[in-house]
Length: 178
Image 1 (tube, rainbow, N blue to C red):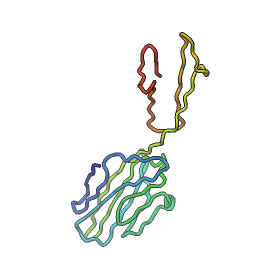
Image 2 (cartoon, rainbow, N blue to C red; image 1 turned 45 degrees about the horizontal axis):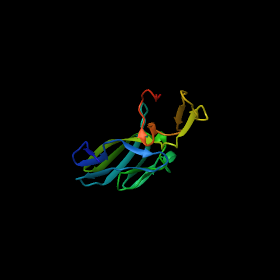
Image 3 (cartoon, rainbow, N blue to C red; image 1 turned 135 degrees about the vertical axis):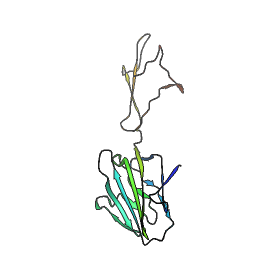
Image 4 (cartoon, rainbow, N blue to C red; image 1 turned 180 degrees about the vertical axis):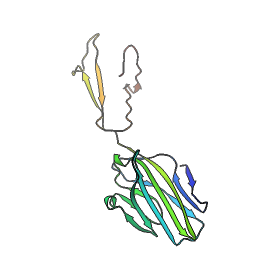
């Protein structure tokens, strides 16, 4: 994992993963966030927002001094466990793909703040493939052709690979792919 440190003031460090986090549809996903500061704090506020492209960020939940205040619309889906700033999404849906913004405010002798974005991609597991043959009997004598068509009902980032006797098939005089 690679991490990025940032803060408006050097007294507050907010640590988040810098790569896209991939989650699986229907499963829980944890967005790990750590923060530390070298100041005396009377209040620590954590805020989580969610944004899709071309839309305003939506408030998900927040906390002040470990008291969590959820948006009532999302209170059963998102969990914050203070004092950590990490977010749990459960269950994950396709509509949860986007950017999650975490902001930490620390008030003591003045206020210090830092915020970061975490990009989330949601993967849908590929269903079992179905193969159809034309002609449907699958029997071709002498010079006839047969067409094999493979489909899946659901799945993200699907890649197809045809094999014969455990070896990859390549396009040539006997095989064409489309």
